[in-house]
Amino acid sequence: MDAVAELISSAGQRLGPRAVITDRSEIEPWVTDWRGRLHGAARAMLAPASTDEVVEIVRLAAEHRVALVPQGGNTGMVAGATPPPDGSAVLLSMRRMNRIRSISADNRLAIAEAGVVLATLHDAAHEMGMRFPLTLGSRGSCTIGGLTSTNAGGTQVLKFGTMRSLVAGLEAVLPDGSVHDGLSGLKKDNRGYSLDQLLIGAEGTLGVITAVALRLVPDIARRAVAWAGVESAQRALELLRFLQARTDTVEGFELVPQDSLQLVLKHIPGTRAPLAGEHRWHALIEATTASPGTDIDAELQALLAAALQQGIIGDAVIAANEAQAESFWKLRDTISEAERAEGQTLAHDISVAVADMPDFIVDASEQVERAFPGTIASGFGHLGDGNIHFHVRAGAHAAPDWYEREGAEITRFVDDLVLAAGGSISAEHGIGQLKLGEFARLAPPARVHALRAIKHALDPLGIMNPGKLVP
Ligand SMILES: Cc1cc2nc3c(=O)[nH]c(=O)nc-3n(C[C@H](O)[C@H](O)[C@H](O)COP(=O)(O)OP(=O)(O)OC[C@H]3O[C@@H](n4cnc5c(N)ncnc54)[C@H](O)[C@@H]3O)c2cc1C
Image (cartoon, rainbow, N blue to C red; front, side, top):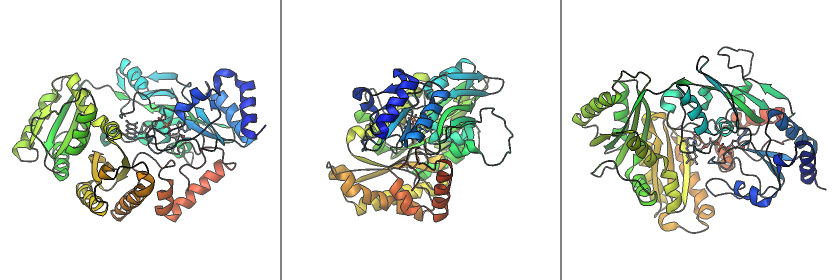
């Protein structure tokens, strides 16, 4: 028996058949990344139901020197949860650890196991009059463990920050099988290095997150969602600053180019453009209040009317009801899906300083389309965070080998532009496998050295998600 077979056999004996899946048809859907770019292989998918079972599994993996690839909803964008194609690793699915251990409005905390799906946590918090203020397009399938391990952002970062600011502490099984318990949720705890923060964004390379203490805020009493047409990305940023100077209720502000909107209308059933005329750019705005007495619709309406009068926007509409508000968000949330339906797309999740972003989008798009004629470049997303998804579609170049042939060259081109603008080649999606080469090429030596030293110190056997994040 080889090491993987020994691990599977020992895990089966100790944990029973529910925790050790070897049926190929059950494993198959989980060995390819969400974008369908990388295909891996795994002879087993281990599915623990408790922290103790994770401890067993990690100890066995260390004993047999078999790598574990932690996985939540497999919605990550950089193939961080995709096993290598040689079958040398096994999947560690956290989806059975899906209990909300506690939720307290008084403490403003929920303790959720790693496999809890984000939408489930939203519902549970809502039932208590509370809210977990992070959301994104994959909320129906991504998990708390995955969100924490990628330090996910989403559409409310403007006001509430990324997972890093919403995690009060976590529980994790470290590569030697010991359990770090940081679930107390203490606001003040200065006992040196923060293991919790180290594990946030570690992409499963330093341990397995089993539960997370999450900060809650009072539920939204009322929200207003608006769609505005603007003539440039610069105007969109002006609109954001205009609103922020007059109200603190804006918590979502997303930039959508006309090109992306058209793709959504073409590919996503049941969608329609919110505004009658054509606009080169659009802003999706969400304003919320926890106070039932505030007429947030009227407030946003008045502000948009003033912005219209000052020539900042060309037109705007406020969602008349919740269903329409959701339909506006759907237009934003399904851009990646629409692009996937259209054909080959190279995704770059990048950030530069907020004030530089409008010019960056325009300049970088022109430069890419000039250097690679026939491609179509555009940027959409979290303008107020200085983070957009800069995507390049194959367009006229579509071919089965486009990613390999031209894709890598285009990505290097884009990443060089980002670096020259003082930005980051990964704003919120992480490094995983897909960005590892570029990270190795461009990361400052001090960062790479520290990453390697930390990885080696905590995981000397290299059993936790090797080949991801650490160059
Ligand atoms: C439609 C769509 C929209 C998205 N929008 C956004 C967005 O706006 N902002 C944003 O930041 N991201 C976005 N994402 C990507 C986002 O990273 C994922 O949705 C989410 O953070 C990953 O959760 P998951 O449970 O699917 O993790 P997976 O994809 O399963 O795993 C992601 C990484 O975390 C590791 N991991 C998973 N669980 C654990 C665990 N318990 N312990 C240790 N390591 C673990 C994996 O090994 C892998 O490296 C989007 C994705 C989709 C499909």
